[in-house]
Length: 453
Image (spheres, one colour):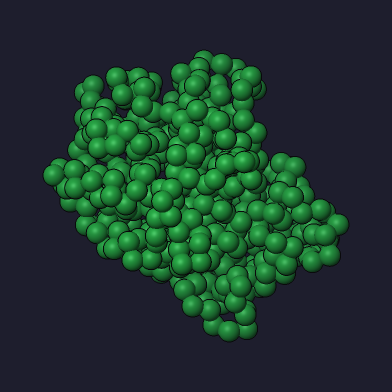
């Protein structure tokens, strides 16, 4: 049994998140997407833990289930902002807990050091070393995973506030760090280039701030539990040892909004070589650019591009189906027309099945020829991406012969809800002839991509 797990998510109590991001919608859209296991997100928040305790039941294995049996694992993300080595550090870490009781013990310990009620992803002035030691004292079954490790502002290796080595960040607690999260702007081949990551499992999760299918499960981890039950201990064993870790689902790293260097205000995007030539200065405004993931990997890598370790796990690289539809048909990502096409295609099964496994001849029966070709090209990694930079998402590129409309591509994707009018949006599994509940709104901060890495 191979399951698709997304263990880094958020709730409606985190800043920049949809107000409708609740357990009901998470379960609904996880099933639409084809995600088999979710983290709860935000377990330190007092209102969210009330929902978790009221609506999820521990089945005795460390896995919490809804009334219909959908599984969750206790999970949160903590922001650590502190000084070390004469430099300000800002590092995000994902935390997994074996039970509600342990999660509450973690929250109680954090409350001694600050507040947890103002944000689902609270901030503490604690070093990574102290943080990992603290959690392991509470329970050795807790797991700390450095989140989106390359993004500039809040990560382990971030150009703005990170470290050059894991040892520097975690000190003697590095022995308790077993895995890293790639983030949208990097993928396994980029991380394989650092020998210091040898022995650390590579994981991918969505860091979603809304439950829509172009967010939930956009990156995920594949767990192979053949002959085994879905239990917290088996999930942690896979994360710690690689046994049962089958691989990851990634977006093209160029899709991530911090892949290349650049300056958003000036629409300037540069490759690492171009940045070096410009000495990191924006050629338009002469200010410092944001140095992205690609450049940071080049800076720290001690292996050549293309290096593949002997124990490398399989990974898939795909763009969410909603974005493909929007860009092929020239419609906003959350518009009625895109939802209608999405629901037509999902007659074949959940989105992950369509993107990864559905036969091309079956896809061609439920959509147009060009759309079917785009899905297969996506599967075969043949779609080029206009790279993301300085907080701007990358965009899949299609020439006129590949699209269902003439003229220049409209670049639908991040922010397209506003451009196309989200008020016309539909919802998977609901009639698109009716005004759907809980759709993205023009003023919904979650659709700005806040915090989505």
